[in-house]
Length: 529
Ligand SMILES: Nc1ncnc2c1ncn2[C@@H]1O[C@H](COP(=O)(O)OP(=O)(O)OP(=O)(O)O)[C@@H](O)[C@H]1O
Image 1 (cartoon, rainbow, N blue to C red):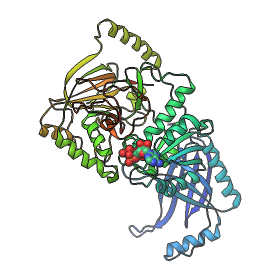
Image 2 (image 1 turned 45 degrees about the horizontal axis):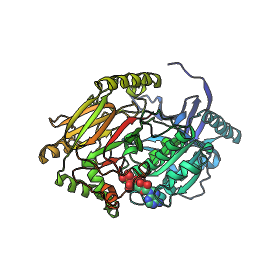
Image 3 (image 1 turned 135 degrees about the vertical axis):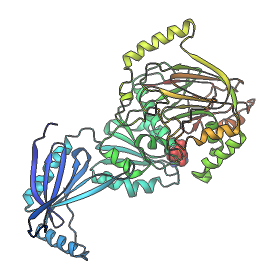
Image 4 (image 1 turned 180 degrees about the vertical axis):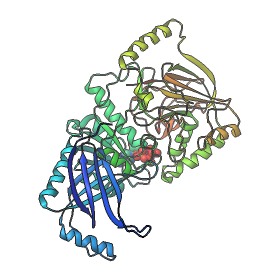
């Protein structure tokens, strides 16, 4: 590897120990040199034990003058020594940086260095700041939406106590909006927010809140660029702003699948250092009318029923999912319909290859370009128009039909619904669970929590697809009014019961679209970007 030129190197003090601190363009390293006498075979040579530490410049959050420590906390001998040193060398700077702890968790650590002179201290601060200013992917200004009612209703506290101090430390300016109603953030993003002044949007909440913000931002981008969302074949224009998630919901599945944990501090640090992860967005239509976007799970049958039931138990908090899960499992409903899908034949991975999608994933990086996709789309249309041969059609009775555009891992199911699903390869994993015994379905569900292959059952099949459609066997009541509006969270049954002449049939389930219930059962789904 090419050795980088040293930008600055000095002998400084960290606590009472002397350290050699070296900075190059990508790394800040400090090494402590401790002299100790070792006795061996009668002679006493002086040996040097070297402890070295370091941090990549891209993981330094901030550098600044160290705050004076006026507290009298000198109890031990080493604390006394450190205090004497800091009095002798009062000019000090603190580097705040990312420290990786257990399993994907990040913490903010501080290293304070005492300098022999004020000039040297200021030089260090200046040179490190110059290097930080070269990192152009870092946000400087963020628009933050907090859902005060998500999860255990701790969103505001989590933001103020754990996140805001880190943003301040990293000199990120923020405009904070605490939402006052459902869809407040979506509507604000769609119509009011002056997006030019921000580098990103932060969502403090759960998956439902993320979905709101995604809809606001994607819709605003399409409207500004004249894209008709009602066209299932329309190529969506990617959003220029990134969305950061501070988990404060009940499941936080999207945060868990992208970061590997649902920890607010870790997420805040990823946002500060400018990490980003592209994400596939599915558009869901009903007879050429746009319904919603989805980035994680579209689930009909089991997961649709769990959500419908759990929405009536919101007062129970996150525990509602467990209760509704057990109730739905015991009901053991299955639903008849036809699933048609266009397999993703040109993708490098498959749903059972046990490859986990991570940041910089090579499968996502080899996703076909927009140009290839446009070509593929016209071929696909020709084939479909002539004989429909490129679409696979499956009719049957299903306990669950799930489309996972990401693993959908969460603390309840660390592997997720589709452990090898990719975040940005332009596909979704379509999982069909056919009618089976309650015991078999239980075995399948159990495999989401252990190492066994959850697709290795005769009644389960999985396909990596670019598009799919579903038609229920039983006619659904039709009301096209207000379809493209976000559905209320009261469920399909409740929506129907409010409409005269609408006869809901329990022969149909409803779609759970990233934690929201869709008002229609027959849907077409295509990958958007
Ligand atoms: N001020 C508010 N009052 C009531 N509802 C709100 C408010 N702000 C946002 N919401 C709605 O609350 C719903 C749930 O929020 P959120 O996703 O943050 O929490 P959750 O449902 O507990 O978590 P998860 O989605 O991870 O299960 C969202 O659909 C969002 O539209």
